[in-house]
Length: 246
Image (cartoon, rainbow, N blue to C red; front, side, top):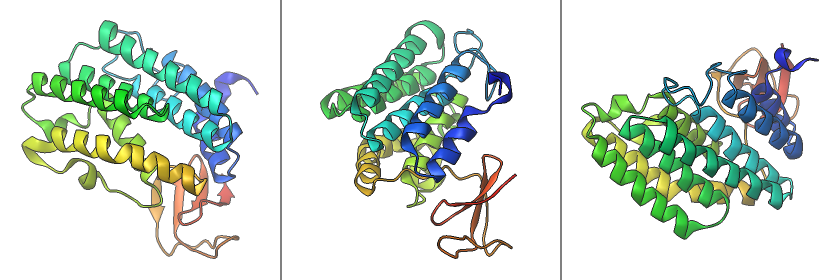
């Protein structure tokens, strides 16, 4: 199958459902590279000065690849993805992104990758710098700003790491003028904890797509009827097993 016919993010999600973490790490890595080149997902080149932060999905994919490699026992590859993610985030901040709030988010991603690499001190310093950039941005609508592409990618990463705990958007952001500050506090305090939780459990769950409760499906593994429609498949919302591929 040619690359143009593949969706590596969907492949990664299905590999997560099967708990095949090496395959998931490889697929997330390919997804990141394809997204940076504008060949997948939003089809926007990351170095385009009008990109508006579309590199965020690639940064999240590199982080998730690192988590998957950690779960697969391939710590060196996880470290490589952390280094690659930091390099992309710094390049975006210094040479591509123009809005201060986007540069703040790129710095928050730098902190995330330090956390992935196990350097919590460097992560704390980078989160501090991200907060300074958010303050400098002085945006009129902090809650609305969180929907910018780069920031939305950061939120999506947090929400996937939280599964199956199912942290909500409101848990991450809240509303009103303090949304950005609250979001950064949540990320600084909880992302390392969520990462450790996934590693201790030995499981990274697929992201949520569209969900349905008491659906006309039954999971063959756990018997649940709550489902998650994602990656062109029906997954069990409770145990992430594939119920049906479409």
